[in-house]
Image (cartoon, rainbow, N blue to C red; front, top):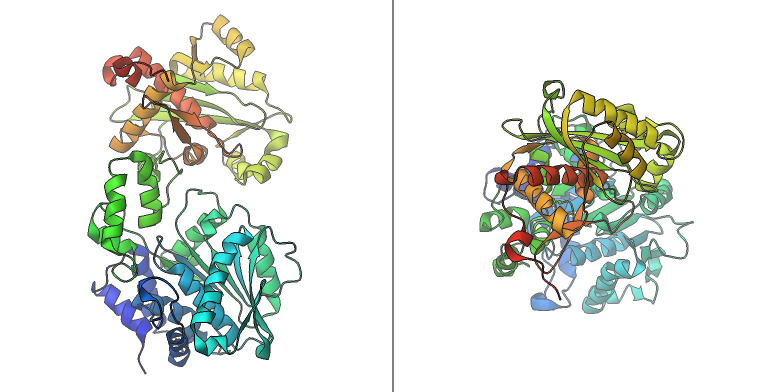
Length: 556
């Protein structure tokens, strides 16, 4: 009997099939598993799935009417998930299948086929298959594909009945239905198979939690998750992705997790985004259902329009980035925080301080930038949050304020509201420790604090938050991140703020910070921008002129 799963793994490892780092890891894991005694690859189960897909008929596009032939990468994934079994129980090994691929690689049609097989060939009594998404209308996309497949496939239309709310296989008391976070009820579910569409868009863990809890009575439950990359590094999807990477990495303790299958298609770090070889590593269906020409057309636009570049990286190369507006690039930010900042060596050195004080639920942030440090500017960050509000804000923002406080990245101030006196005293201590040339602050806040500090000889300067002042500072930050001439030390809160930061543009090409989602704090980046703005104002020879200096202000 043929073994398409191992054939694919060997072809990837031999370099015959182009693949990125994590697909290579998945193939290496498969070859290691082939030497184990406690699990085995059931080739009959693999072939059953391959044959089932051959029954299906495409109902649209260039393959209309033709049999659904699984590509090699699809046989590897589907064969692995449904073929690997435990030697002792003869039941499937995997409970979660996580796939991350760019758009237009055939995920929707494939998911529909997996769902139909879950009704017909799983052998699960009273199977309940759900296409799941944040909105029921989104869930209906996969489910709707399944309905169209039934109409186009005589072998299925004679067995299955399609209704307005579900596909039913009466003989086995099985059903296939769409399910969204906005469905009327999520209680009483007993899913055997959950198909999660665009998991990167899920913002909370409740929906997946209810599906998993409902699977408790099933013999071989499965979560089949297929998604593109996203922008939210605090999302449930990114959390699962990080675990999946650790499961694939034999150097990580999570490698022993035998219940999760992971296939993450993306380029190697540093690959040229405009190279066809890069596209092939990220798009396993390239040349089958997705053409080089279609990617080329999108790249031609993206390389000329920075606002389109982020979409290209996410949807064509499956690279997680920080915001839909393409600001700031995650890889560049990470590279500029690889080394810790030596605070002791900076004592007494000249620096510029940016201050962003809390308004309602925001954090308070003070960021120092040392422009005389070599070879990179050094950045020190300070954050404050009311002690009694940490737990509530952790739940509200879905980030670990409590852990950050324990690890010393954030200072808990007394009470349940921002303690400006506490912050003011800390600023005095900081200014005594370092040579703060200027403390730059938002002109619309902190009047009493600024008055007190100014009276004590600290040079406090109001700094505008509009295009004219922010644009030069933000563009200088971009430039230094790309050239790796700034070191922020990898501070986790500043990294989170950077991942949330978005910009809006004016007709003259200037940019300023925008915060569309009030839960996504950017306080540290705002403070960092203020500090860099102070450097630009005082040391203009180090930086290019503002766009407003060269073009003026455009009035519409």
